[in-house]
Every structure is written in C-alpha cells, then in structure tokens.
Image (cartoon, rainbow, N blue to C red; front, side):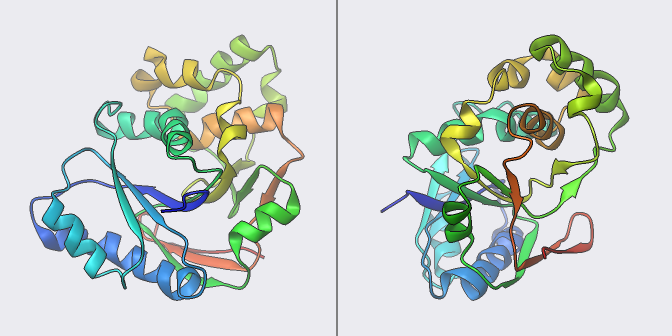
Length: 238
C-alpha cells in the first residue's frame, strides 16, 4: 500500500456494529467526492479495540476503498484530553512512521459534501505546508487562560502575535507531516501535565505554533465543503 498521501482519522472502537455508521458515512462521503477517481488510502487510527471482523465490515461498507487500521494503544492516554494530546503530537508521529508525507485529516464527524479540486494537488502546487478549511477561534476558557502564557514562556513570542481568532479548523485539514513534527515544543506541550489539566486541544496549540513559525504559509482548501455534525454546521471553503 502506497502511503505517501493518505486520508487519516482517529476513531473509537465499539461493541455494537451499528456504532460505526458515522465512520462509514464519512468514508462513503470521501469515496463519492474524492476517492471515486483518486483512490487515496484511508488510515484509521484506533485504540486497539476494533476487532478484525469489525474492520472487515467497515471496509465492506466503504465501497472497497483501501483502508489500513492502525493500533495506537501504545501512545493512547485515554479520554477527551488523550484525544487532544494525540492530535497535537502523536498523530504526526504515527503518520511519519507509516511513511506518509501529506496527511489529510477528515474526522469521523465530518461528511464531505463537495470537492472541486484534488486536495493533495493543492498542497503540492501551493508549496505551503498546511491547508485548512477555515480559520477558527478557541472558545474554551481554561485553555485561553493558560495556554498562551505557556507557549510564550516556551518560545519567547508575544501572546498577541500568535494567540488570536485565526487558528486552523483542524477537523478537516491537510499538512506536510515532517513540517508539523518540526514545530518547536510540540511534544513538550503535548506531554505537559498542564495539557491534561486544562484540556488544551490541538486547534489552539497547532494554531499558535503555526502562527509563530509559519504565519504566511497557511492556506485554505479551495472548492471543498463539508458538514461537521458535532457542531451541526456546514463549512464551505472558497
């Protein structure tokens, strides 16, 4: 399986097979709008609890797309905070271990509605390391009260220069894996006790570090739209 370019997500394992319907709907939307022609592999990170027969069921229901299930239980910390920690650092680490150069993250709760252009051609032709759907503000009060000071302490940057309403909306995004892993202090922030204590998410952490290191190197995924069910909203990228 060629994994240089891949569409990736983290999902939970369930006992009841119907619980995978959201993941399957996500996969089908990728097939309809991207992979019907382009055939990019799907990488599904899980906590080591998706049984083989469940994996086979998901593949069967996903129009025969090439799907690789990757057990990340060796780095999984558990809970919402663990999910955030994974997306801050281990997402990129695991992608690099798989040989992925460009990783397109499409979360389980995101249904692709339209694509006009090949997303991977966009990032290659733009020579930008990160493409997002839209830019977003962090609304979690504990994060806003603690994360900026910690990043300022680590980097020496001024808070007003990197902590703003222009963070990549990470649930659908596309990035150069090596570039992301090279962001300073990424692992330090992910492993800080303050991350779990204050529930720092990947959106403000990655957004702040990208604002410090690559402010003029973040683009948008043109011609793409999707429905984000967790927020009950449609996102349209111009």
